[in-house]
Length: 333
Image (tube, rainbow, N blue to C red; front, side, top):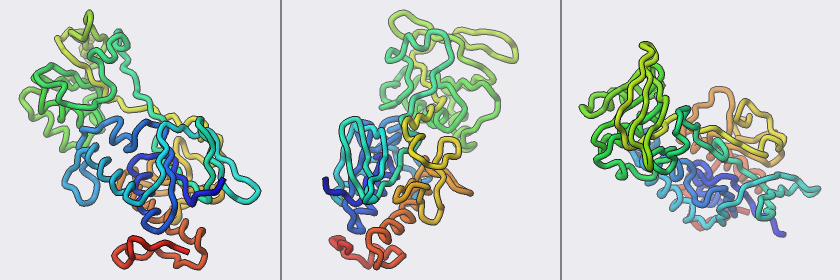
């Protein structure tokens, strides 16, 4: 089995940019993604959410950013393997890396882990009856906000995901309730202010969702005003959870990395892990001073590809050439 230059584990935004930049600099790349589509959380979790902190865009819808990154990555001809969850990472006596998935085995000279938070699962709503209405009015993923047109919607949570979703849903819904167990919010203050200034949006805080009620579909919710120890039923058509997701890195925890919580410790100047010729970037990687943003992950890719280029071609410059000075068909070696 002939080794490929680089295997990227994870087809989210950082992995896609990794495929684009590595391909630009002449590397043969294969992307392994456990989901049935590329794009990571941008495509699978919050495709309609607006992203404000990526260079070049005042704001951009997550699904549109994912589509642009996919187009950029595929322009450089990577192999793409979807629906493949990686189980093991092994090194042979020749220093080649063997990536074993549920479907087979891949061999590479280098590996880049851009797995984000891993196989993400939503935090379940801690409310009686919520599990009975999943897919019938209780939502953990929001593929389209248009489905809420003219409806009464309760959004639960106080972070950016909850507030961003509530703001987007408010463009379509007849009424929006934002339920948060505290009076303080983790969400961006400007976004929260924008949401709460809308006349058809009501804040319920400090309050907790206690029950989801209905027959064939959601018809009402029971909310407890926690300071008053008072419960109130409210007519509602949909409940959207903005409580975030639980990271599940699965077998990756046994791959010999040094971990800080759910993240792999890397060298900030090269994104190298403790495993030889294995790199990590994006949300799955950490180092002192790390800022968890997509934009940070893009910069980490540049550092990683620069080091990878040196490993593959020891005579090459230690610095990446400016793309404006390159022929796009250039290959290294």
